Image (cartoon, rainbow, N blue to C red; front, side):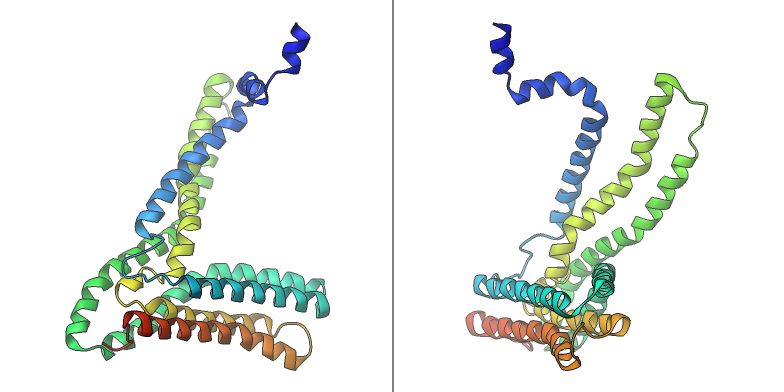
Amino acid sequence: MLKGRREHMRPGVLLVLLLPFLWWLTLPLLVGYQLARTSRRMARRIFPVRPEGYIEDPEALRVQRVRAWVALVVSGVLLAAFGDWQDVWEAQRQLLEGVLFAPWLALLSAVAVVAPLFWAARPETRRAMRTQLWPAGRSALWYFGAWVLVPLLFMAAAKGMGLLPSSANGLFGLLLRVSVLFVCWAPFWWVIFFLCFASGPALRHAFNLSAVHAALPALVTTVLVWALALRGLSSGGLPPGPVPLGVCAFLGGPASVTALAWWEIHRLRQRHGVRLRD
């Protein structure tokens, strides 16, 4: 009978029996889950998936996804055909730098696009836009404040861990270390989770600027991709391969995004009457 019970023991029952021995794993997972859950809730509150003024166009979204996959495949083919390991490391470095520079370049792009559009608008439209600029600016302050907090919280956590007394042993020492570990690193990881959940909607919707004007996210995206492309060209040069092919690959990415952005704005004007100057 005992043999039959062992054979029919479910994996969940075995996990419950081993739970007291896995406290070192379950406790960080539970804490991390709660941090991720609360940070995701805050990120969705500040940067909703469908912000005010956002007009969803399923056909445009499908074309944008296809364009992104084609760009990824073309980049991989160029690396495989003409690149070496140094080019692979260079591509990874540019990708990491792009992730770090994209939010700041997005902010500059938003300012560069909003300013002329704001001054070109009619006076009554300008007053309506002004009331929506503050919520968008406030969400941008949240996002970039989180980026500024990352190195500060990291240094503060490292300093806090260094203050632990080396003489703390036994159960009291273990509890003290766990408590200090949580107090020092929980804010840092909360901000990291917040940035992970907020970055996609923040950059996709240009810090909720669709509430100011429905065409602003597409315009900001256009300026942003050109800024990123020029930054990558200045730091890493053209993609690997013959020079004409490298020039085409360099121009093809931002040019295709620009064409899609203007096509999206054209559809907004045709289907919803959205004009750049109202």
